[in-house]
Image (cartoon, rainbow, N blue to C red; front, side):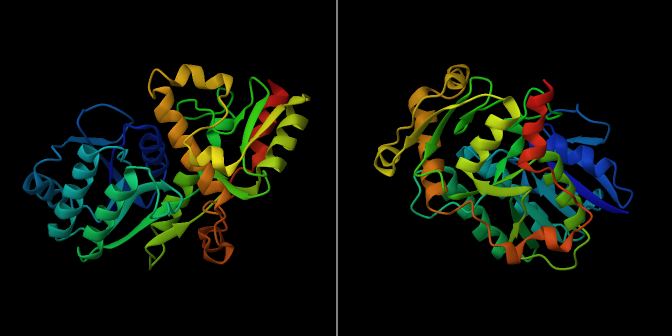
Length: 305
């Protein structure tokens, strides 16, 4: 069995990854984190500010592959993952690293602060001697099935607010978008561990369609007519979006100006084609055993609720 260490295994996606790895007969999973709690896996408390300690843990546990699900939204989180990369590069048994990205290729001219942090981590990985990759899986499909779908993700409302039958679509709504259910992301990760060679970018998705098509499906599944607004590019460039009713509960964690700016950036990236992944590079092709949920599958939970 190959030893896999998951950093951030108590987080939303991290917990999902750990649960999938526990079920895999080929892998032995170890959780790295600040607390000794979580799913039924071996858990180790680590201090990300101590590279030598991290190296010692990876070596003593004979970790072959590190999977990071650290939420990279701050300099502190970026430093934690950077130190984990340095430790992995010094650990003799450690050969592979999946860096925490779990989204889409963010353009270089973005205002999103995590882009610069992730760039610096990628530079470290290129010089590390490790084989590494980052997963691009589009937007998490879970958000459009909560609370009726099994998920560790918190609720958020990006573009479509299904409970309130409202949508605020960037651009014309005809740009292609990709989504993946987090449990399917985890299944893709488990499958990728058996692939002999990794590229720096690993693409996968559960479904691809336009937002107009998405909303049409949502209307069919809920047997409702949605109130639809289109936010043009000039509005998005000002860092503004049409507020959805569901955003109110999110302001406790993301103040309104921050949430608006973040979702406006995402909207610009939708219009810019960043979520329209190249089908010829899909991990789906190499892993036919993974049968991900489609948008229709996910939205179907609303017809049963």
